[in-house]
Structure formats: structure tokens, C-alpha cells
Image 1 (tube, helix red, strand yellow):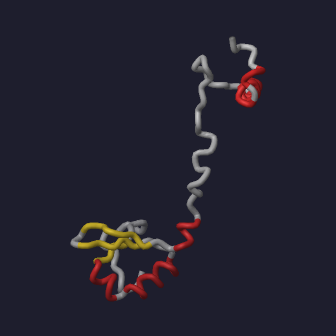
Image 2 (cartoon, rainbow, N blue to C red):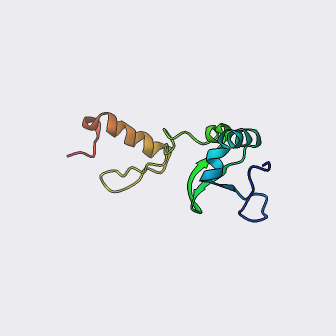
Image 3 (cartoon, rainbow, N blue to C red):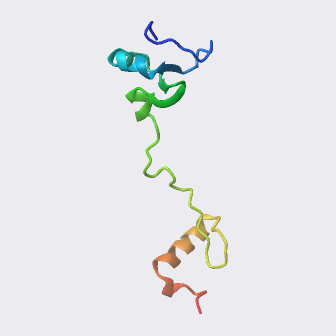
Length: 107
């Protein structure tokens, strides 16, 4: 980052730059341009406490989508408390869901 932003988190190259709210207010457009060009995040502080984070749009777009993020992580138990573990068991289980009347295990 340029002179407007000084990394006050230590000497680590991976450290996030922190900017006081007053400095951010006075140099907002310049800081936004620097974030866009460098791809680095900037934390905005108020009285030394982080209150906001300015991130480049590209890093936001790289995140996994929220919808469908849990796909495949749902565990479903059958009436015996068992989880289908083989492809055949899943197929049988899905058939039971489609038409419970065809289930031979029902009384």
C-alpha cells in the first residue's frame, strides 16, 4: 500500500492493513483505489477497534456460493435409525420415499 496506508499490525507481509476512521473518511477514494489495485483487504477501525473491512470485489466473487453450500452434507436416517451406506441402499431408500406403498417392510 502507498503512503496513505501504513500497516500497523506488525512486520508480517500477510498482515492486514488497519486504517482509522478519520483517515478513511479523508482519503476514502484513494484507499478504495488501492484496495482495488492491490487486492489487499483494509480493516477500518474506530478508537482502535475494527468496525468494517474493505475487500476487493474479486476476492468476494471467489467465495463459494451460499446456496447449495451444504449440498451432500445432510444425513438422513431411515425408520430403523440407519443411514444408507451403499449405492443399492440409497436406491432402495429413494424408492421408499417416492412410493411408500411399495415398501415391503411397512405393516
